[in-house]
Length: 605
Image (cartoon, rainbow, N blue to C red; front, top):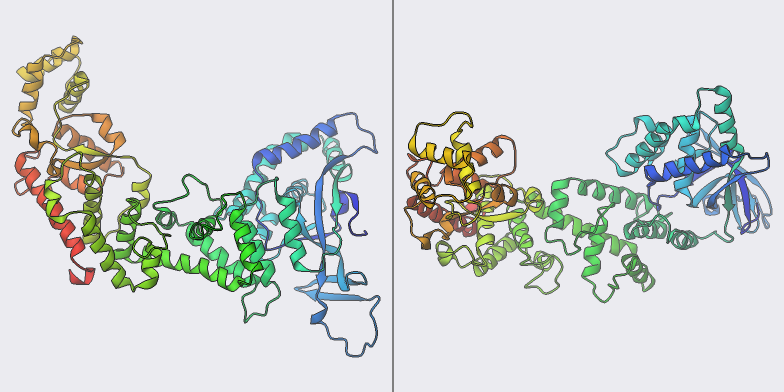
C-alpha cells in the first residue's frame, strides 16, 4: 500500500505477513485485565445482531517495511539506474523476497514489516490465534529468541524473565476465557473464530520516508507517549540500539548492547544485589519494572543541570548528549562502569559492609561529586584498599570510639552504633550482613532488661502468666503464681503494685538503679513487631519469645540473638536473668568488636 495512507486489514489478512519486533522496543507488557478487555469487547460485538459488513476496529499498528541494505550487495555487471528488481534470500531455511522500491531506493520485503507501534495488540492477537488453533502470522523478536520461542509455546514459557512472565499471564488469561471464545458447540466455536478472523480489523499505517533508522526512533517515541507508558530505560535502549545498528562486530553495535543490557538486568534481579544497589535510595518508592533504570536515575542525579524531573527527563538528557557530540560508546560505558563499581563493592566483604553501612545511615551518598562526600568519587580516585581505610577513618570521626560505652538510649548515635556492632559481628565471623532483610524491617532500640511497666500492666502480667504456663482451670499452689492467677482470673481493673514489685524481684530486675537502665549495655536492636508485641516483659519472657522466632526462621539480628543467649556474659549460670554484670560484659564487647572491625583490613586479623 502507498505510504502515509491508512487502511483496514482483518485479522485473517494479517496471517499473510511476518512482523518483526525491533530490539529497541520493550517486551510484552499487557496485563490480564487488558487481555480480558480485548476479548470482552470482541465478544460484545459478536453477540450483537451484526451484519456481514460490520466489523470491530482495533487501534492502529504502525509499520515499516523491512529493508535490505543495498551496500551489502555488489552488482558489478549492472550499469545504470535501478528501477525494478527482485531478490530472494534464504537465511536459516527461510526465504524472504525483496522488491526494489524506486522511492525508497532500497529493496523492500513485500510481506515483512518492522513494528513501530502496536506490538502489544499484535502479540495478544497472536496468542488468541494460537489458542484457537487457527492459521497465524509470523511474529519474531529481532534479538530475543527466548521471547519468540515463548510466543510459539506459551504454555511452557518460563516465568523467570519479565517478558516471558507477561506472556504466560496473558496465555492463562486467554485460557480462563475459554467459555467466552470457545463453546462446546463446534458450530459456535467456528462462528466466534470467523468473527474474530474476518470482522475484527486493525488500522494499518505505514509512515512515509522511513529509510533512515533515526526516523524509526522518533516515531516510536512520539506514538508511545500517553499509552502503556514506556520507561526512560526502554527509550534509552531504543536510542542506543538505533544509533549503533549496523556497526561491524569489531565496534559497539545493537547486538552487543542488547547482550550487555540483558546481562546487567539479569544480575540486578538477584534481590540481594538489587537491595544493596538501592541502599540509601534517593528516589523514594519509585518502582523499577526494568531495574537498570535505577542506574540511569543515578547518572541523571549526578547531572543536576539536566534533571528536570519530568517523565522522560532521563531519556531527554541522553538524546541531548548525543546531539552535542557525545557517543553511545561513552554513555553506555558510564552505565557499565556504575554497574561494575557497585558489583565490585558487593562481592568484596570489606566494601560490602562499609559502603552498605554508610548508605544505610545516609552518611555518604553515591553521587555527590564532592570528593569528601561521594562514594563514587572516592572510589574513582582511590584503590580499594585506600577506600576501605578512608571509610573506616570516617566512621571513627562519626562515632567517638572512646565514648561508645557511655552512650545512652536517646543519644543520636546509639542506633547506628548498635547497627555497626551487628555488621562487625557478621564480618568477623566471615558472614555477610543481611542488608536486604534489615532494610525491609522497622527496628526499635530495645531495653534488654525491661523498664517498670507504666501502662498496660495487665498485659505485662499476662506475658509472665503465659511464660509460666499457668492453666486457666487449675489454681497454682505457689504463693506468687497463685496471686498472679487470681489477679488475672478475677480481671481486677487495678493491678496491685506490690504484686508488680514482687514479680520484678522474682526475675531479679530490681538490682540496678534507674540511671543504668538506659546504658548501651542494656540496649539492642529488635524488630518493632516483636518488641511491641511483648512490651516491657521480663528478660526470660523476652528470651523465650526470641528463641521461638529464631526456631521459626524469623530474622533476628545476630547481636540480639547473642544477648538473649548470654553469649557475652562472663558467667552464665543465671540464664533467666539479665544483671548489671551482664550489661557490663555486653558493653565491653560492643567496644571491642567495633574496634576490631575498624582497626584494619581482614588480612590484619
